[in-house]
Amino acid sequence: MQGLCPSSAIEGVVWPAVPDQRGSAILAILFQLEQSQWWRPDELLGWQFKQLALLVAHARRTVPFYRERFGLTGIEPDGPLSLDDWRQIPLLTRSEIQAAGEALLSQQVPSSHGNLSDIFTSGSTGKPIRARRTQLSQLFWSAFTIRDHLWHRRDMSGTLAAIRESGKGKALYPKGAVAPNWGRSSSQVFNTGPCVSLNILCPIEQHIEWLQRQDPDFLLTHPSMAHELARRCLTDGIKLARLRQVQTISEILMPATREICHEAWGAPVVDMYTAREAGYLALQCPEHEHYHVQAEGAFVEILDKDGRACEPGEIGRVVVTPLHNFAMPLIRYDIGDYAEVGEPCPCGRQLPTLRRILGRAQNMLAMPNGEKRWPLLSSADIRSLLNIAPIRRYQFVQKSAERLELRIEVPRRLSSAEESDLCSWICQKFGYPFEVSIVVLDEIPRSGAGKFQDFISEMDS
Image (cartoon, rainbow, N blue to C red):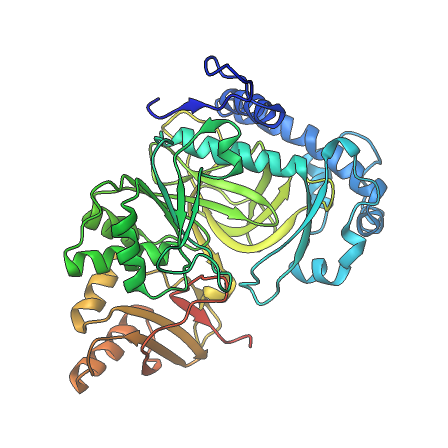
């Protein structure tokens, strides 16, 4: 594949390359992933449960939290693990993780799993958590990172531009930050081009000028930022001639974002579904727009309200168990997201599919009768909304069961007729005569982690 240049750690040897110890381990995992993606579903499930049995036995033996939890089930210690056994294990919630604290940490992590490190989630649910991971779990993270590059046939000799850093004082305009490669996950296996980055909290005008100056081959950012950049480029007639692909992460990807990126740059969007505390959950199929669960790294369940596994076309809660993190096992972790199960993929890969990821319960519209709905806006919805008024960015906020707030960025003051039409559009779209207030802001703020949500419910708070 063009641009695929293996990294060699041996002086005087460039081909065939001889990677260092970590690079060799990643390649060994990748070799196995190339085989397992084609396995029959029952074969894949069988290997998952062999790994889950080891994880459960380790957690029961070395983690105080699970010692108590598994004692309430009929699961035999150190025995084989069946699907019926598995379903006896209660779901693990974010609140339980916060309350358990040190009791969720293993008291005897295998030394072969490497050093330990702590990570912190961004807390988009309002409940940030601390998780602990091993070098081994990071090794699998690297392998899935490279699988994504390989699946989507990226020329890794090109320039990668990343707009996702949100740390105070980091990667600031005009220079941003420059790294010689695409990061440790990639550089220990392949020689790559440089990675340039800019803080996502910079003004959009600075992002546009910086991107023109960098002229990257690939762009990695949040879906909302990709959408805003593409819209601004279309409005101002700006081209990014070398841009081949947009990679999106961290937020829910809307269909309209795929369309506007293609319209602005002729570039496809490739999405990925990850969680800092749980690793890679699903990657977009190389041939289609749905997602393949990364079953070799995590056991992912999509469960209905009664705890049963959803069928294709059904929406349920995402429950995940990372297979290889023995430092802080997260067993049947209710991550807080919802997703729709997909059909078997025509590409031939047997990895489970997700048709779409819908986000968190806090992003659901609560109707006055108690029903909850996903307020997802289609491309046609967005076009009709933007035809009413010159809206640069919007955000819906549910303030109460009967009241919605529309926050907008606009270049001028709206007329009474435009405000009235917007209120009518909202009530028609969401199927109820809500009381609607329109709030005009110079800039709708992102979260501290640089994320943006187009719908927020304040009902719980």
